[in-house]
Amino acid sequence: MRCASDLTYMWINISDLYFLTFKYLASNGNKLRAIFEWLYEAYGPQHWWPGDTPFEVMTGAILTQNTAWSNVEKAMASLKALDCLSPEAIFALSHESLAGLLRPSGYFNVKARRLQGFCGWYLAQGGYKTLAREETEALRRRLLGIKGLGPETADDILLYAFKRPVFVIDAYTRRLFARIGVIQGDEGYEELRYVFESALGPDVALYNEFHALIVRHAKALCKSRPICSGCGLAACCVSSVYISSATSQRARH
Ligand code: SF4
Image (cartoon, rainbow, N blue to C red):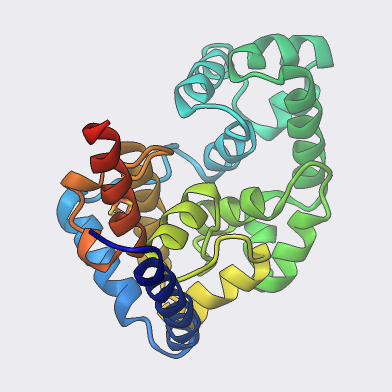
């Protein structure tokens, strides 16, 4: 039976390990790449982001805030059915009409304002071709200047619509890598983005697939109550020790 001092000792070691690993990650992406390889092997290509055009990808990125993708699909289908899935058509709609079409995606009044604001900006800039000429950091700053667009949405747009090497940090990424023990999970967005990007190097295809696989794994196994027994990452995951021990203790009582 493990005693309290053993657990304290293990915690100190894990804490030390975290700092060592965190530093190691900044200069070497081997562990991250190994995690990616396992995820890819387990789930295969995810074909993200769904959308026929870059504008559809951008619209999906804005609508998916605080809602499941299945709800976004319904809203996008309503826009498509009326031939309204273009910046010009969305911008021309009345607020009430647009909010009605976006109803399935939740927070539809807020999202209607947000999407219309984005479309007004997008058209004023000259659309995709003009924006695609911008340097990544400049384009990122401009996207972050649009009301309602936070770093995660801006980075979804940069990675999946503009094919820029920007690693998206979301709640699933924080949860998975904090559990594995390579981050604390409460670091700032930019700090984490820097860690992943510096460890992996600029690679659009890798970032595209990695983010999609993280989301897939977080929904399949690494949920809020994780199912570690079926997870091939358990051998390198510091949390699996505690989670397995807590699960067996629950089973004993
Ligand atoms: S072992 Fe458990 S906590 Fe760790 S990554 Fe897998 S599912 Fe998540």
